Image (cartoon, rainbow, N blue to C red; front, side, top):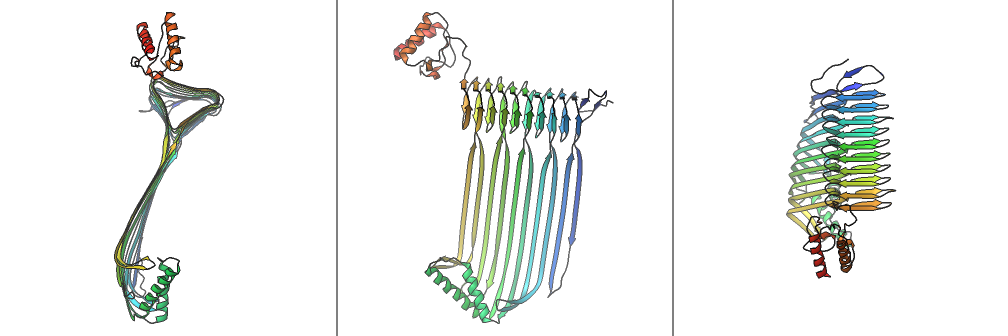
Length: 573
């Protein structure tokens, strides 16, 4: 059975069955939308009281259901591009995926969202007995709450073999995003460029809460003792005083003054109005990295471009080889969190039981932000030897590690860079409060009138994440065609550590690293002896230990230039 697809083709062949088919593996999308919108309005007449409730709920979800291809032996070929999205392609023995174009092995996204809105409105006459006062009045309130939430998860793709080899070869780019690649035997990944990227699961939530309240009441004091006692206890609970005997005495005096005012107020008038807004948001993103695991050897080859990794986990029980025509970049993936909050509150109040400050106002604003970033570097581990080779480009490790049981070798036509990454956190908070009222400055100082208070805090922290290279039982060798850079990184070996930069010196016995020849007279004797022998002598630039203006950036072998160096050395000697 054979069918043709207009864009992408995927050929499957099982040697144990005389059947072949052309198909495409994409996840089945199960979309579910559950809109629920309703309003409930209820009016309750109790002492001329009215209440209205409004509620609105809406949910939506999309779930990816991937395909599964399982066989003893698998061979899949695409004449153009191949895409495996949220699916499983597993073989018991050999598993081979090839395409003349691009191969994408990626995760499928699942999304869910919800929206909730609630509102409660009340208005009417209120009355009662409280704090020794009988009162009646009118109040009105309007409170609302709105919440939005989003969540994104991933259905991962898995390509591998249980006991045999897994081979994935693309004629163009090979892109793996949050993929699980595995082989019981050898694992071979190849493309013009190989990208081992990370996916992300994320969630976010936004909350907004609004409130409006207003009202007034008129009453009379029917119980002088209760009114005084409650005023005394309320003032004592406000604090602001120290625990010294002076502070305790002044607090007692202030509370007694408030109690006398409350007891001596026959007609009580209270009222006010307030408005508040509170907004909060939270975002969270967590990286899901690609993993490549080999029961024997691991080979990753970029035939024309680079090998790029975002926090991938690469492991082999045997040897591991990463080879690129251009660059090898072992980078990181980031987990991020952020929070934001903002609030605003304002209004006024009236209470004639406080004879000093019968009326007051308030206006408060605050804002806070926080961000957190945690990085996960690429991890390469080999049970045998490990080799990284960039023919024309650079090898870069940023907050990553490469460890081998035996020898670990890095060769680059350009630079070798071992750099650190950074975990960071930042937070800021700002508050501004102003209004008219009374305040306790100290045990002996009270203030009545307009006041303003401002507070601001900022914090920032950075943590370096080191790159690490190591050999548990062998040596570490690094040869850079240009520069070698090591910054906040560790290099450890059980045996030797060999680091070479600018390794274009001809491999002959008469190559003299001038910086390693000891004192000046000894260097001069060695150079004269080699010149007498009649052989070509190569000498490197001035960075080898002698600051002579005649040294140039390039390597030279002309005997005339060599004689010139001897003359200069004789002057220095």
